[in-house]
Structures are given as structure tokens and as C-alpha cells.
Length: 234
Image (cartoon, rainbow, N blue to C red; front, side, top):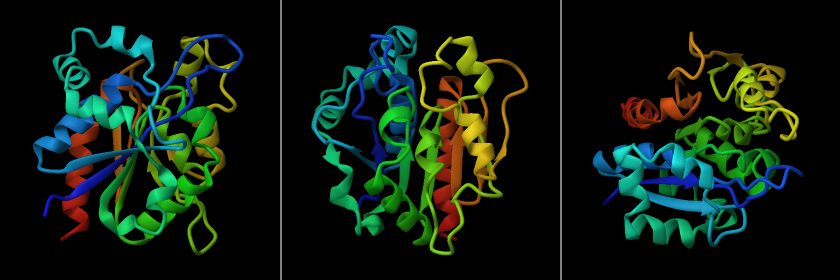
């Protein structure tokens, strides 16, 4: 039986009150999805509302020279899946179906995955069932309010990364997002790490939690998820 991994995409396509379009970030879905498919996993897609998950159009232009992202965006099977995502709520109580729950980035998750009750429960249940939980760039916002059965935050005392406050300021979006991700992770008691240089790749694995900092981290992020799954099953 093919092992499955759930990618949770955003349903949100507006960047605050700026009038700018947003959504899920192409490279941060394409790179890990292709890497994990190469390792034999079936990737399933969900979102808060189900149906078509909005793609950040700017991310397509940013990855126009990335062959994996171009291949993903031109793959009819993948495009059908992101156009017809499951609602997250369908999988609450069925965490055992998946080897990992993955939250890609894009600014969209900052608006609809921080407090999504179905996602929070699914993630907590999956982690406590021995599954891997992973998130990249803005995706870790979905982990910040996950509470385990003992009442502690999932990320408390865990080594993690994610889109840095400096990066948010550099793209001049810090005034548009509801909260700064790095700041929120630290508030939840996480040990935050980032790359030594601006926009550098950084992936952090702490047991069954895998996080990536930014788009440059996406290729390594996919491989780290596979490695964490293998380690968890030993």
C-alpha cells in the first residue's frame, strides 16, 4: 500500500488590505511534493475551505527557472489535486492515514491557518500518534497554536525555523500580516533558528517536527521529511 502525506494549503488569496494577491507558494509545494513522490509517497492536498487552493501568482514568476516547480505546475494530476483539495475537516480523526502533515508557505497561511480548529486538532492528533509534522516558510504559523494533550504548545522547547522577521521586513509585508512568524514562535517557547545569511537555506529537524525557513530551503525540506518519517518508524 502506498504511504500518504497530507499537504495543507491555504484557501486565502488576499494580502491584508493591500489589494495584492497571495496564496500558496509554488516552490514550497512543488519541491517537497516531487521529492516525496520520488520516495514513493502519495501526496494528498487539503485546505480550510476545500476546492481550488489559490496559487500565489508572484511565486510562479519567481520559480520560472526552477525545473521542478515548472514541471509541477505543468503536471495535470497535481493541478487537478490543488484545484480540488479536500477540506481539512474530512481528515480529523483519520490522522493514521498519513505519515506526515505538511504546511507549505506563501502569505496565505498567515490569514487562515493560524487558528483553524480542524487543522490544529489534526496536527496535534497526528503528532501524538507518532506521525511527522512539517512546515516551511510561513507554514509554521499553523503550528504555533497547536496544543498537545498535556496542555503544552507543540513548538514549546522545540528547535524550529520559518520565515524570519527580517525577511518579512525586507519584502515590506510586515505591516500586512496579522503577526510576525518568528516572534510568534518565540512567544510559544520555541527555539528559533535561521540561516547565517539573508535568504539562505535552513531546515531544522527536531524529532518528528521538520521546519524550513524560506523558498531556498524547499528541496532540502522534502528530503528532511522523508528522513524524519524513516527515523520515526525505526
